[in-house]
Amino acid sequence: MKKIIAFVFCTVFFFISNAQQTDPLTQKLDEYLVSANKFYKFNGTVLVAQHEKILLQKSYGYKNITAHVLNDSNTIFQIGSITKQFTATVILKLQEEGRLSAQDKLSKFFPEFKYADKITLENLLTHTSGIYNYTNDIDAEDSAIVCNAVNKQLVLDIIFKHALNFKPGAQFQYSNSNYYLLGLIIEKVTGRSYEQNVRDIIFTPLQMTHSLFDFRHAEDTNIATGYQTLNDTNQIIASAWRWDSTVTYAAGGIFSTTGDMYKWAQAVANKKILSADSWKAAFTPHLEHYGYGWFIDSLFGEINVAHGGGIPGFMAYLCYYPTKDVTIILLNNKGWFDDALNGINANLSAILFHQPYELMRVHSETKLADSILKKYVGEYVFDKKHHAFVTLENDTLQIAAPAGNLPKSPLFAEDENNFWLKIIDARIEFTKDTAGNITGLISHYLGKNEICKKIK
Image (cartoon, rainbow, N blue to C red; front, side):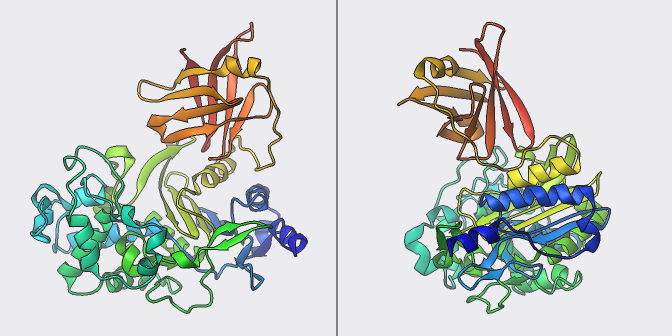
């Protein structure tokens, strides 16, 4: 059985366009995803397109490993926080209709909330409200609750009982509560459910017929089984963590396919559904490059609008490069809270833009003597805000970058210059002077090569 599973993980499945088979760019994209699947970093479906031509639409691995059912183009995945794009779009549509404004105070809709008069809808849209994140209260012991329908007042009670974390507008802090509240505001303004608004405004006009909300566990057989762990020796189903859509709601409740998500991406690219002014508002970056339901950033010198989604058993990522008209959609039915698809998106982007990238591979570990490892110990500076600290503990190098949200993590040596991390798909390359002294490091991560100078 293990040999069969291992073989399947190394094999490519189900695919659409015949032209993809011979396109060199497509072959490179596929080769990279095969390597990601082989090392259990990607198990799902991908769609990559440019100028409305699909370069690659393909599935890798299992939809349900127990039943030996493979992922295919019809497989439905949870998209998690990519849902926020749809919520923001509905809000902007209602603003166009004069039914609300992004500058409205939250007190207009929730006067009972102590801090509501200090918060605008724009603060909610841009994660600058300071409102407590209600999903912080969900852990393994709550599976019996969150996997069933939850009364919305229960969630509101959790949100409203906390003080603000900071003055609205002063900081960025990602909070699912912001978009949960936006979903309720949509219902208050329209008199219809949040889900019906999404269907009427987005799903139906775009013919997104395979997108849905999982109330009481939809029985569509195309829905993938979500896995916490999935490899040839260990498979842990995250079924106990299939959160009900009343819990994830407007912050993360949508299920979809790559085909439907491409219809959405095309609508974004062609500025459908909303006016040009509304799309401009959506893509105007505020603190930490966040707009209305989108991160606005750049990679390899190309501006992109993107968002990821992560929920027990599933990961998702949608990235669009406006100037290159490139779309990357990744839907994955394996993942846990700290997992993400940013790295895979970065490497696919590198391929598309003819930049250096590395196939996923088995890293060979070299044991270095403490006398050598001591040379790397010190403080490294990226800029005034971002510093990395390398320490030697119990014969193992550790690296931490507090401002970059990298906790103390072990570094594993491939040779005396190159080290890698297991916690994230990153390589650390140390630089030396002619005398062999360590002068700095280069962090190879998410398609970027960040240079650090050693200062201590």
